[in-house]
Length: 150
Image 1 (cartoon, rainbow, N blue to C red):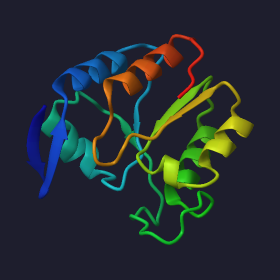
Image 2: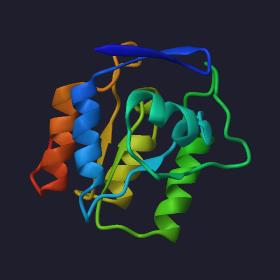
Image 3: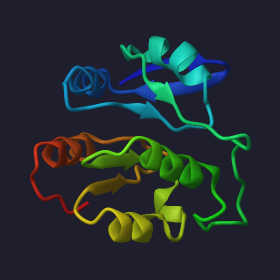
Image 4: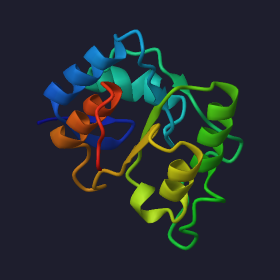
């Protein structure tokens, strides 16, 4: 693992996973999109610091801000609204949503299962460990049309 300081935050990352994400980003049928409280700082500061080669779009809403413990539902979550709005504006055959809050947001996975059955994969990495190789492998399997149980 490597580690860098970005805008005052220590970011630890796996260079091999970054290489894999860069390879996936180069595929014709794959588009990565930022959906993060980093908003425009993600492509400007975070991506170059960890080696992501990207020109990813940034999804955001007027209230793009962290939500602190209390409201754990998905319906009022700005990221939930942003992804639903983007999927309506930019229909896709399938999508993967990776967010460390997904396991803590009641309703997000149920919405994806109902609205996009077998066309969505939601991955919620441990927020203390980040994205693991097996989660990236599940994403690759999903992109390749294999059934994934995450």
